[in-house]
Each structure stands twice: as C-alpha cells, then as structure tokens.
Image (cartoon, rainbow, N blue to C red; front, side, top):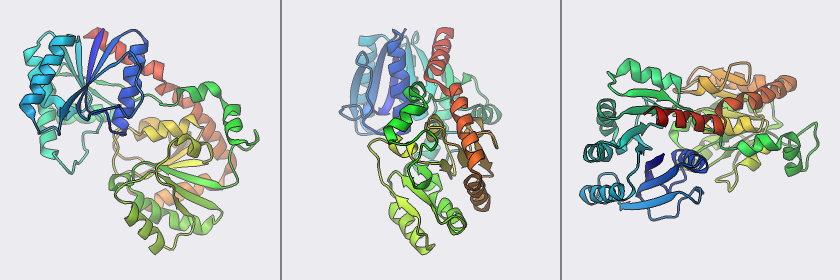
Length: 372
C-alpha cells in the first residue's frame, strides 16, 4: 500500500512526531511505500526515519498561513505520488485534508488524533472543535489512542465516521530483546541491584503546566521528610522550569534535581527506581511505556485519558485520583517503603509491555488500512 502521513512539523521533537517516525518506519520496513508531508519546517526530521521514506516539506509558516499556496503544493504532491491513503497526524490538519479528499475522492482519508477529547488547548481550542466536527462527518476513520478516549468520542459526538483505537507502540523494542544483563552491563552494576547508589523517583517530560509538576513538588515534601535518602529527579525542560525551581526552594526541598534535557533519556531510566506521573491531562503516556521497558513501576494520577489502560493499580504501579496530592504522596511513600513489592511490580511492568509492542501495533495499522 502507498500511505501518505500528513504532519504539522517533522522538525519538532514532540511525542506525536516520535510515534509517527516509529509507525511510518515500521510500515516501510514491511514493504509499504511511505510518504510524509510536513506542513512546516525545512528539514531534516528530528527523529530518524527509514531511508525508504519520502519526506516532503510544504514550507508553510503555520496552519493558518499561506493556505492557498500550501493547498496548491499539497495537491501537486498528491497528483505526483498518488497515495492510497492520507493520514492526518493531528486532527486540526483536516482543514486541508477535507479539501484534498474532495479533490481526490478515491484516496482514503484517516484522521489520527493524539490528544484526548477533553484536552483544553491554549490556542485554537474552538478551531479544534470545528475540526472534530469535520472529521466526524467526512473522514473514513478516526483513530484515537485509548479505549477510554474512544468512549468519550462516542458519548459526546454523533459520529458518522468509523472510530478505532490503536495504542502507541513502545519506543524501546530493542530493550526487551537485550534483557536484564544488558542493563547491568550498561550501568556497570551487579545483577542483584540494577541501580546506582542513589534512590531515585523519576519524572520525565516537558516542564509545562499540563504535566502537573507543581503538584508533584508539593506531594514530594512529606515524602522527602520521611525518606531523606531518596531524590526526585526531573528530566526535561520547558517554560515552567524557573517557576518550578522557585517552588522547590520555597517548599524547602533539598532532594530535588532538575536534570534538563537528555541526549538519551534511557540513561535515566536505567538508574531510577520508579516513575511518577503527575499530569493533569494526557493523550497517551509514552513515558509510562518507556519506564515499563526498564522494569520501572509507576505512581500516577489516573487522569484522562489512557493511563488506566497502561497501569493496573497494585500490579505494575499505583493509581491515584486526578490532582489528589495527598494520594500521590501516599502512593510514593508506599512504593518506596516496600522494596520487594516495588521489584515485583517492576517485573510485572516489563511483562505487561508486550501489549504495546511495535509489531503488534503495526499489525493493527495494517489491519485497519486493509479493511478500508
């Protein structure tokens, strides 16, 4: 099959672009002809792509800039490439795709949404409501990232299109193949303790309000007081960093580290003991899959959407009601206080990640495409 993915900007280092690079490269490796149209950017792609993938830069200054020239260029590219499928990798791109579908009616159009139904957008929020309406009426299929989110769409919208749930794949497939002793070799550690001397609670992601790190710092205060030998480490950067550093200081926290951006975040997973997820909102939490690949259990807010489909409470981590800071503190205390249970949940996390294996997710994409 010939599949064109339509992305906002392949220069970005976001989770959406990361997942697209994994899925597109995987389908290319299976023999499908893959094309990517990037609305903005000049290249190269931030994430490595299979060398067989054709990547075109439309050259726009944004969704609402140069609309007619963008549409003209996209039309020319579709005439040239003649894809069987056009897959939007963000629902808001439908404002172009609905017109392209009208121009090329034999081309199948799929919209792949990476944000949950209840996400509040600081920009273009009302525009996204219109986009959902257009997709629900005119696309052939809407792909969402969790069964929970699929339920929200079906309950709140009169969908005329088909809707399917396809999870994001784990990005660290090689990790599972290498297994335990590969971690030990990379860290120069012994088999009975694949950790360095520090005891680490890890938070990974952009330092933005939606990640809820302000709530995490408040939750960490009683944990640090009870367990002074443990450290909370943040990996990532963002516009809230100064505010969070000031908040940590005002709370009198001593064992908090802001590590900044990491060239390879896997180094931090290898030396952590568990993951903490304090998000106010999520589309699908890739960091949970990453952590599970390294046998890390998690303590997480059960926020919308999909977290409850990755973490089973008491099995591979602990779920806490959304925004419940006292509950988050209790969850962290619980996972810190029981070494044996923490190791057991970490082992279970590694077993459960098979549900999100790359090959399984590619199978689901192929099944959807063939059915259309």
